[in-house]
Amino acid sequence: MPDGHAARRLARLLGVDVPIVLGPFGGLSSVALTASVSELGGLGSYGLYGYDGDRITSTVASLREATSRPFALNLWLPTGDEVEPGDVDLEPARSVVAPFFAELGVAMPPAPQRFLPTLDDQLDAVLDARPAVMSVVFGVPVAEVVDAAHRQGTLVMGTATTVDEAVALSTAGVDVVVASGAEAGGHRVSFLRPAERSLVGTFALVPQVVDAVDVPVIAAGGIADRRGVAAALALGAAGVQVGTAFLATRQSAAADSYRAALRGAAADGTVLTRAMSGRLARGLPNRAVQAIEEAGVIAAFPAQNWLTGQFRTVAARADVADLLSLWAGQAAGLATHVDAADVFAELSAGLPHTAT
Image (tube, rainbow, N blue to C red; front, top):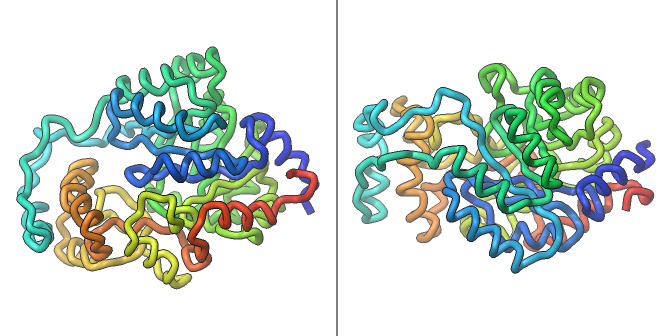
């Protein structure tokens, strides 16, 4: 059994009480949930997908009003295959999703000048904010960014879906590696090989990453209760990152119908799909996913994500789960708690006594 020393060291490094990290939700993060996890003694995380510099600055201000404890800000790194509005013909994809816009009573908007803000704009705002942790997905941060973060006391956390990705991150100087197994909900954040060729399960991935790198490893994917935490630490992880179990709580930004779908999910109820964003992601199948997949017309990322996002935003306000991206991990059936404090207490019970 793990003795808790690695978990204690990681907690000290992160400046938290226990090494429980909230998964960063791109597009679904909330100040309430991030602050709640930080206040409970873990590391709250906030996903900044699609946020420009001004929005990042205002979000950080809200986070600091809600908590004085450490938190992480998460960025998506570009992989080089992203398309711009002038590079893609959206009409085929528009025709597939047109019925959803009509159902919700909204017009389909024209394409924007850009689908996403520039990474430089985001990085400037994040570094100016001086968070305790800057976490990244979909790649390796360049040396200048890692150095700039370290100079101001910000830790850098990278996410790996394979051993090779973990080694690349460690070599680049990140302070912590998140080993994200294929069970995890949301986007598969692979960057060295296609996501379909990087579907390594948590139990296989974590111990191999622990053996391959010299920095602390956080296990992610399929962890939703004390048993998952204990298993992760037994595999050599120093901490855990949990998304779906927290997403099902009242503090999350998920719609009520989304949270209900998570709590009612079966163990075999998730699918891997590109339908909603153009990139491979794990979630619960619904009418939108099924219709888009049956049509076989999916625009490249981030065009597809922008397009479906135009009706998903309205569907969230109307609480129509069938038209949302229901990202969920394979342990969604264990996401039974409705309050973040109860999830945190359950996860903490899996830590060795010497780690708390």
